[in-house]
Image (cartoon, rainbow, N blue to C red; front, side):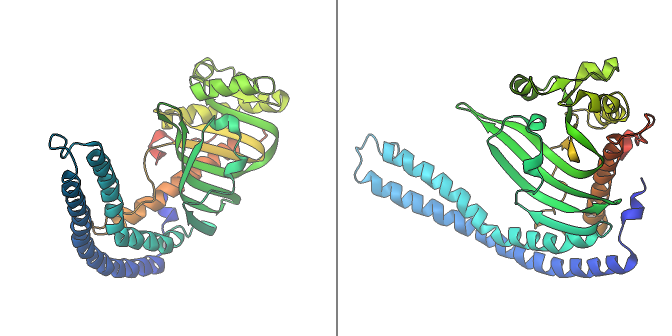
Length: 333
């Protein structure tokens, strides 16, 4: 994949550069504003906390001054208030960066037909993601979401973080990129592929075991690490033993830390790419924004992610088994 093919033309780049200049002017002004807002807002919280502590001292036992129960409660409230004060102080910077992203991303992703960008909203496709692919969670957070058409198929790509809270801790179930895409050939049922060692999946095997059967790929190395489960063995076997297995092998090399997950259900497919990185974020307000350094990598990342989804989409289609056209590992974003 040549990322140069996805870059905006000269006229669009000129417009982006003009917007960057306007952003830089506003960024410098907001940076100066934030510099005095942060110490002022937090300083006011600290002063209020100290004054209230002194007031509490006038009523406390001399041996309990500064460390009585009301004091401790006050300090906790003061810490929480300081955190809120900080985020309130930097809000002009946060608002500026987000407003610029709202304007910028649909422009730089012009290679996507009918491109749409949202942030912080639950994606439309998320509720259709097979539960067996993720596992149990009770907290969900969504960041950037981009949708449109790429290479003739509709998609929705979004950053998601899913967590499960217990009485002792909060554990991460999934964090990374989810790409929902229109399949080339509808799959009559549900087919999922995930790592065999995934404890969450082991939990769901017990719940859905009567409906979801395992189908081996016949590739020993792959079956040792991965498992394919489906509610339609007859339809799944040609895919599992063919192109989809080869796609999983490549994805296992491209995402070695926590390999990708794949799900096919009806006319929709899902590719889940675990990752800690925030792909479409702008640098902090104290850092100048540069087209080559910050904008072009975003375009290349999205193009690479969609190209990967396109390959998995082709791997999940009916047809003769054979090469999937998988790129080498260097194409990983």
